[in-house]
Amino acid sequence: MATDYGQGYGLGFPESERAHRLPAGLRAPFEARHWRELGYVLLSLPISILFFTYAVTMVSLGAGLLVTFLGIPVLAAGLAGCRGFGAMERARARGLLDLEVADPEPLRMRKQGFMAWMGAVLKSGTSWRSLLYAVLHLPWATFSFVVAVNFWALGWGLLAYPLWFWVFPLYGGQDGIQLYGDETHRVYLDNPFEIAVTALVGLLFTLATPWIVRALTMVDRLMVHGLLGPSRLATRVVELESDRGVVVDTAAADLRRIERDLHDGAQARLVALAMDLGLAKEKLAEDPQVAARMVDEAHGEVKTALQELRDLARGIHPAVLTDRGLDAALSAVASRCTVPVEVQVDLTERPVPAIEGIAYFTVSELLQNISKHSRATWAGVDVWRVENRLMLQVVDNGVGGADTSAGSGLAGLAERLDAVDGILVVDSPVGGPTRITAELPWRAV
Image (cartoon, rainbow, N blue to C red; front, side):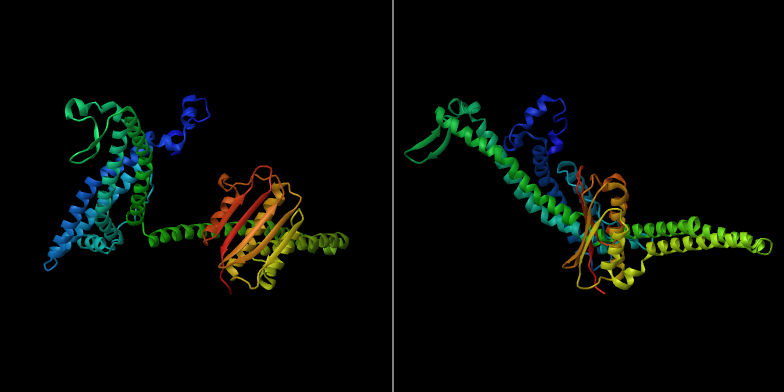
């Protein structure tokens, strides 16, 4: 893995550079990753024997005692122990296989007490998946142990054969390893050519062993991830809880923005307008010309306030989007962009208003970014549907460099899309061009 030998590459460490020039096949037997994976396979057999014995014993005892009340607590204790073994296996996989598996959902107890705990353990899918892991892992661990040990021992033993073949004639009473033998004829690996060929075969086994061990541990990875990690339903619940938090935060931020815009914009102008009209009313009898001029200025303030209210309403939900759909609404947004924008909308029907609104505001924000930051001379907006996904793509020929990881508005936009199972993909190399693609779930009206 890169973490094993990648540190310092190209940073003034010539030994590391020379190591990288070796092909991966020659490097694999000596890498730390191989030894960690081999250690994982060797440890799996004794651990799985212990795990299997405990699980089968406790579950069998609990099932046998179910005719009495003792069976339920024994079964619950057995399943709780399986959960503990599962936590240990996740930690072992994390340390030796670099496999990051999230902890499964905790026990959900509506009440406190031993009875509530037993019920939670027995009803938890994690408990039963851990039991299934204990049963299935023993045969696989046995197979993996036998294959890995035989290949590793055979490879290194044959590779080192030129160093220890002298043991046979000196202490074994034969010329070397017996390759073939019957009552009348025997073949020994004893001359220099045969010894060299034996070492070469050992080298091939040695080079192949890391990849065989890696293939064996891939099955372990799948078992740990599938049986000892969180279920798909639990993962989805966590995602939805996170998305709900994002939606709530976004709605609160939008409300604060609307309140701020009203307070600092239209409301302030309307207050000033009321004051100006009050002064004009007082001046009306004394100096009609001054009063007329003040009324005229107030009329201008009314127009400005109305325009600000229209812009604010458009920012909440534009009327053109409701009346005429995405094509007309995006064309209106494009007309306000500082660069020429080509809009193409290829939709035979309209999505639901919620998705339509998110698509509109996504394109609107991306076009605002183009106006403010891109230094582009052209931009394009494409909207189309692919099966059950609504696709949006905004491109420009600006300077590029847009990045969602920099904490910019794109990061917030990506979070908003993620809250509705959407995706935002940014392709913006430095120097341009920039291509931003958004996917939204399609739900028709």
